[in-house]
Length: 429
Image (cartoon, rainbow, N blue to C red; front, side):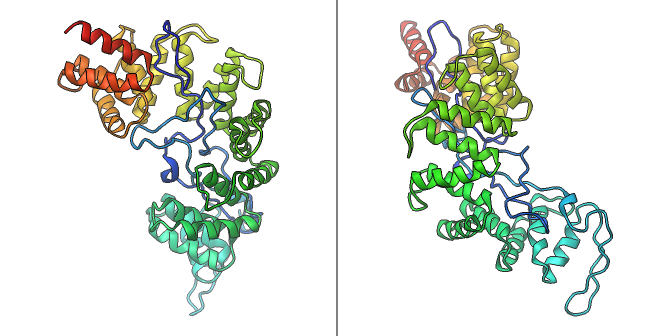
């Protein structure tokens, strides 16, 4: 994060993120699974409207945002479940007729719409091409009660039968550990198997793990090779992830121009995470000619698509009048949305605006609920925000001593506003 000038209000600019409307964390964030509809290519089926999750910090001036709940990178996780279209199924629009179980029992006819029970029956009857479809529906509770544990069983059945997309999804499950005991070694084995078989999502997730510091998975050079394959294969989230490496100079010479080109390719391809990173490049003039209005347009596009990090960046430029007229009420509304999604820096900026008398509304209880655990895990900017609550008695009992302690902690994080408030409180003692 860049530090602001003394004339600005905001505590900091959330420069880069890619994840996620859900604000997931590192390996804990939702895994991207693929719909391997029978008859589709192994690397197809990604829902481009769902969350990419790759950290995309720009050189030197940026730090990854942190989730207020855990202190881990918001966008460093795997990608979220996605389904393809039923039209990709060989029997879409047709009555598939009654299949037969090995014991002679009749299977129900598959409907034109997604039919998880039919897909499950086909899978259990040995038609493994339908196991992954059924698993995704059970995992997401679409057409059937949600049962993520049973989905693991279906992924495993599909993988054992040779469906590499099911292997990729199973590998992702073993990495996140959300629905099965976490097993990083087994995860990498499954992801490598799927990637070697042409499942681009598996290649992406391997590259993401390397970016997150998993040296057991491979080197930065390996990640670049994998992500180049994903990007060249037409998957925009791969281009965004690859841009990370060029932006930071990991495994390659730092090249902000190349990074911006990749972010553009990602954004144009429909990955709004790439739009946020490209917007940051235009805001700062890194790798591109500085264009603050264009940055605002890109942030707004991401925000309108549900990417909370885009909403934060849009709020920041509206607060600071960067490329758009200053609009504190709208900035406050957007910060409130960001805070409600669990991003601590949004709560902090909103609290600071309210402290300075801006015409914004702060939900004290939401801010407290987000900032307290974030501060306890040293999430940047969270303790400074919590200090404001204690100074003012918003959602907590007013406690000047506790506020001063928290402002001092923020000051040690080199947050100018925290230092200013600490000095002010000492002067009033």
